[in-house]
Length: 328
Image (cartoon, rainbow, N blue to C red; front, side, top):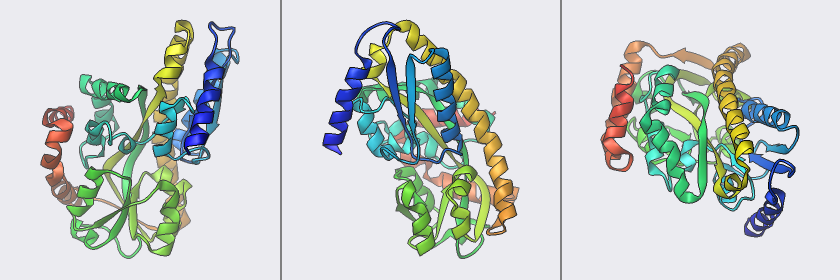
């Protein structure tokens, strides 16, 4: 990947050379999900409004489905300005911003309103700034939704039903401990490999949003789904300082407003699409869907929240407490 990234970086420097609106700019936006997901739709909307509002002075080239890079490669490519925008999941940043693991904590947020209150809080905005240490600019948070559980062999009703089962996870210490807390075996796999791993029995189950589950057809190779809303899956929309600092201030302001509007659009899409895909999953008849009762949710929550103290030092106990307090 090194020579490819270096060449792309060199080309990108030429793209952003010059000053003022007379100069054209190219934003390469790389992401790993399908176009018919909240992030996929958000990227397309961002392209549309940027090109309209800049009269074509800024071209946005969107590369979905990991066509250029997976999320981890995209962060490296961003640092070198080989691409100018990406929206990786939080877990892809935690190697250098471990505090972002707060978003992986199970049952931390009661719903979208609680989540957004935290993101807009001083702590949420502070977390957005921490990626600067690696030459990145955190622009905003993009929503995907809350995660549900699927399994091949039997329904997941109580925490003990997960015991001994292999669940695919993103690379995240929090998610590892989350599944260990219920006796399951977490298996780290790239998103692009999940379908085949489920199909071939490499893993028994997975956790994901409804939009990701449906668009990647995970429900077709699983027999049971539990609507748990146990964890959150979101993204940080990022650019790089090399590109961002070279932009004229008035153009930067236009792009910032585009980011704000695209964020609102993406977050509303996430809510609507997840509901739409839930109905499609049910209608497919390929998976039995169970919605947790309050008693069942309480049992899962108590078990999984036992891992919180393990992350007080790395995330910050006060940050976690702030998030919990905002539920009130």
